[in-house]
Length: 492
Image (cartoon, rainbow, N blue to C red; front, side, top):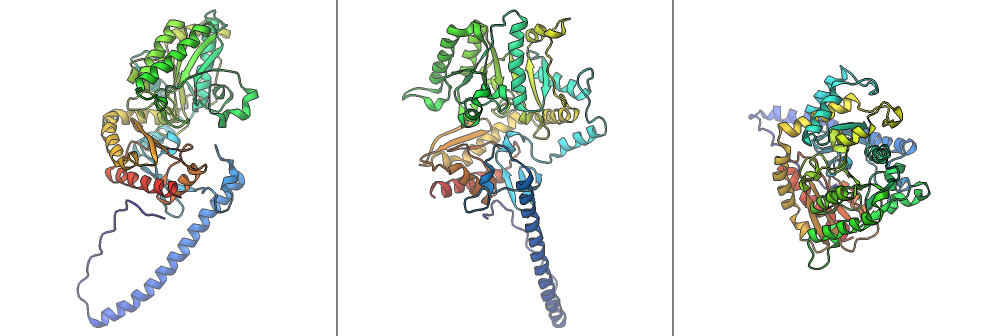
């Protein structure tokens, strides 16, 4: 394994002069001590290795891992490593043999302030002694009320009502159902269709998958899914010669308008990942696209759903990605980073007029949707601790300086002859490998582990979404080792 960015141990202090007999005695005892220490280290290493392999074997026997072809973990020369994690500290994950891995993708984009963050830990420990959970139907509690109030305040009260769930796909399901039902309650039950972008990803439950346009996830379940309309992505990599990112945004918005002109009376909502379409390969677009689509939704009476599950919570440079376009949607979905990467939590924020569409003496007009752990107090308390760190540490400002340092550290990759479309948005970096082999992503992941990095490319797209806590040494190491991994894999 390549060892990187290690601080060398300090030199041992010299001892005072001793007699020849004392030195001889000491040499003898030291020699015996070394043998004993060597044997102890060997035994310890063997035990750790056995423990490490034991967890792997047990996991492969009993755990069906997500988004994984399990056969790839089978033993063999081309097998994909399965790493049993012992613990985490800061930006690092550690296995049972003491090896560490810089979590350069924030454990699937969720961890904002490091593993085992002492401030979030303290809040959760306090909450554990107060209330672990209570149903949110007919009851409420301080963490969910305070979180809802704080999030509403971040939108200036525009999105003043929050509905809670546990994961991103569930939040998308809620937004889709709310949009359809709100139109139905408003006497427009014919508005039943949804629009998504080419290459979009919104989750893998049935409703969320219906507005996803990634064949790998969707094709097998096609017969189960309700049809949706797909429009051009504003991905600026599609720019024609001489076109700017804004030009691509205008072309993509024109495609939306053409569809709305034809079918707006049938369309309930359009759903968009603002600024970055993550799962399709970190496809980035200009904020102009969002402002143009917001105007179209107002003109043609179509709801705008923004999926900020991955791109919210400061990831794109502002707390909400849509702030960079100067607009607010009708629904915003949050998850992943909202709890700091600690506990499953998602929510949908919406406007007063949507809320009022359900407000009635008739129970059938209510939004009768629920999850057992809706608004869990522990998860909400983790989210409150996360928001407190944003405020107390002025994180969005600090991230601008940190992002500039990371971009400089990645400069050799941006200029690499086998790299195209190097791009950055806030605390997200991505680039596309030129002429990458079909197994590029698997080999990159395995090689990265040997360089103390956790990275999982999407096809031939390498991306970084690190926690917001990297220091200068970690940033320098991240740049150096990412380049080393890329050179190893792309040259193989």
